[in-house]
Length: 390
Image 1 (tube, rainbow, N blue to C red):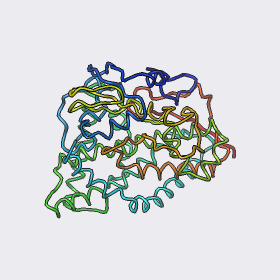
Image 2: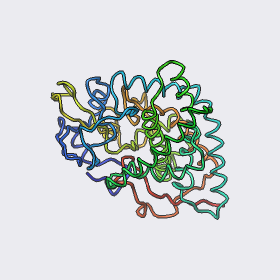
Image 3: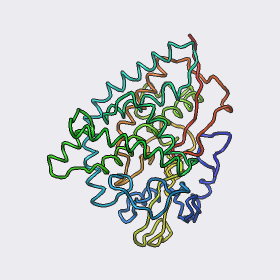
Image 4: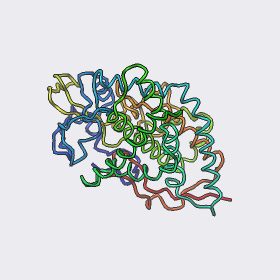
């Protein structure tokens, strides 16, 4: 399915038609059939159902080189189920408490300010993606995980290879192997000499409780957090800025109530563009349809967040929605995004500082010249040339 050329931040128009029908059987690039779940209520029900396995949650349905029945690696918190998942999730959640995230806000604010200073020192033009949207979440996640800042460019480059659906099997394997080897060395150092970072604390806590994380678990968990921790947020920052450049009348709302504005932007944009995969371990009803044990389902988050039944006027960006329903941009249920509170802080700080300090910000090219990431798991814009008045 393709997005509408007139509004490339909108999801494919076919979703509106599909939401009026029962589940649809679709053929996935990996070569298997799955039920496409498009309604808000149905997507929420599927993601909260413990009989739905998340073993394919790494979006293997759009990776032609993956195997639907491939083994789930220890440490893959987004794919594990039951007790194995709960054990890892509790360890990570302890590092993303409201208190810890609140303590990170000042660091994020200072980081955003420094990048704005550097960008504004230029002759009046910049690429918001490379100069602002990408480096900030990358540096934040490196700070949290204890990754040296000098390695930031490596993670950006290899993360792109991991989330692209155009990559070859060899390119995917090489990027994963390079990152895995690096992380194994990093975590070995942390085992010998723990520092004040997420993984050092998890290593120390696991050893103290007699339930230590294995090196394989640490590496796979590290890969998951590194990619999820900056790829999604970076694309959300760039797309949010683009939308606000096209809706300048909305910027004052962002500055007055950034928390409310960010929630609407998350719903409206829903950057996880190919949905999340679930596997039915037993027969279950989804809406009016019975899904059989052994069937696969694709829960389309961007369709659910544009469902008129849940969000009247869903295709409109509306920062004044009354009693807004919770969006599904971070998923739902047991596998809801671990770092969502940190992502909110990063979005609030980047948008408020950018538009308060640069009120004359505008596109440096026509919107038709922008190139979008149609073949990556996380939707976004490849470059965002911007300019401003001195």
